[in-house]
Image (tube, one colour):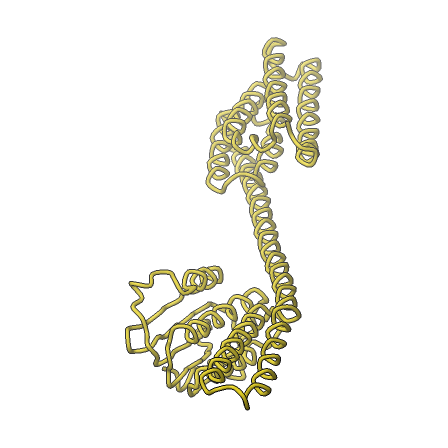
Length: 393
């Protein structure tokens, strides 16, 4: 049984269907009483009965499950087109006003039909109406072509408007989801900072105080062991701060500054020389593009910190050229075999983020030869100049 929202949506469509069927049946009866039709009362009754069957079938299926209606679009449209064609031919052919029901049917179905099915239905309409109107006088061909063109173009316009609206709603839903995720990450980051980060700082300070008090009495081995535990906690604190920074929502920040600051922290922790080339002139990005690209950059830098060993150099570069924004992260560390790693190290997440933006991600690496991650994303230009990276690896 349909839920209440589905029932309401179905009712808004189903009631006009019954009004149209009732108006057409009334028009047919009045026309027959006025002697304008050659069909018999039996034929008129059959057409009205078929129209009522079509409306009743839609109502029955819709009340049971409105979603089934979409799967029955083709057979229902074929049935209704055949019925309208017969009614048009029996009530005067080209002079019959029943042809307007083609308008009512196709313009209402155009919103939910796939493009190929709509084109197929428009073709059947032209053939069916041509048969119902035959033979046409020479002076009627222009009007016939106009009617077919009017039905087709209005239906196509409704189809395109609905598709554009549906795409807009999908994009809006994606942005809303990204915003909700960013808010949730911000909340988690605050909890890390106020909870785990605070406890780690307290533990480090406590151990350092204990080490200072015990140092005059403790032997060298005990002092080294205590210092080792302090270093472990400091590394955990650094990892926590890095995680907090990665969870911050960067979609409202200057991406160039954000990337440079992140790269500087990673290079400082690795003891590597940073070569950062992020130009001042950058194309305008949407919040979704900013979020995805900064996440990819963070993941790439995080991989350098975790898997590159002790690289001597770290290259980070951004450039915009020929409608593409390029972002490169490279190091001269240990490297790895991409074929052996497959989609580990967050590579699948990076590829999915770039694919969401319509871009491409390339990873080059070999053992002992470092790693290069290149992301390319199509963007609209914000100015008329091209910016090329310099000093990139």
